[in-house]
Length: 77
Image (cartoon, rainbow, N blue to C red; front, top):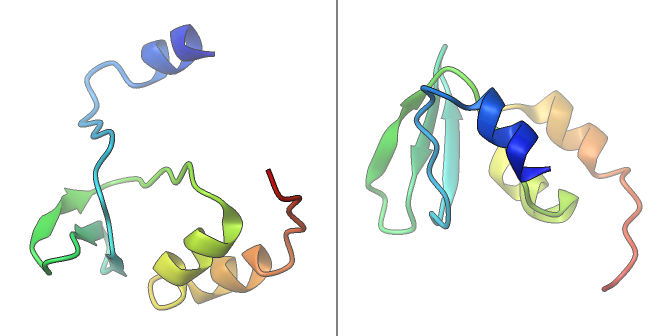
């Protein structure tokens, strides 16, 4: 899986292990850290987090998507 992802993101600004507490959509995806500092503006956003966490990040920036994510059934680990 990582080999496939590696080919897909060649040349992209990929940031791993970065805490994001707020997402704003104004044409670009603007990401903010827990201290309120802007992490940057991006053309695309990939969330690799559980649906309940994604809902909290996307409720203002992408409310239709956030509403869909509330219907995702998840099993505990």
